[in-house]
Image (tube, rainbow, N blue to C red; front, side):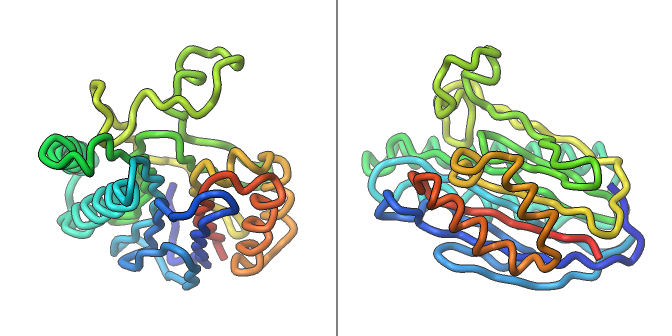
Length: 256
């Protein structure tokens, strides 16, 4: 994806939902972290500078999930903000894969050293702009969508048993890969080459939204509400109306 001196109108929401006592999700916009609240901003973006948009969904007992999600999203954000200008895409990929592996191994080590943190893990889906190019790093089942005149398209794959086996009869919440998982860890990393146009929408979300609200309904809200800030509460309300069984976290960024 490329942009020439356009603006992104961004809003992030993170809500505990109706069932959980604790919010283990977190979002990041630039250098602002969002949990149990919302945040809106407008960012001017072009060929220079760096912008981070990310969502993480923690799992684990006690408060381990919220620690895991915060830890990983902070490490990835720090790595992205430390990227040098002029780096080629291969060097950027190497840096993010290295930071992802270190973030993963850090969670595993903490779980081995402290029983309280045993099993701590998190998804993370992070979209970032650097030197005019967009990249994505992803592990788990949080999602990234692009909405345009052609509708809402998911660009990530869920790292779940259902998706990798291609069997819709399998429950959709069985993760086979995420940060802190005990199995062999991997991340999906790719550069996005599409051009964004005025009115296009970027959506990152945890499964607290995507499991509770049908994609067609999400797109109906996104395409009929011009202000990103007005979308936020509608999506939270819809997720709760659908059951609110998990924490609800998302970022909506509209090109203008």
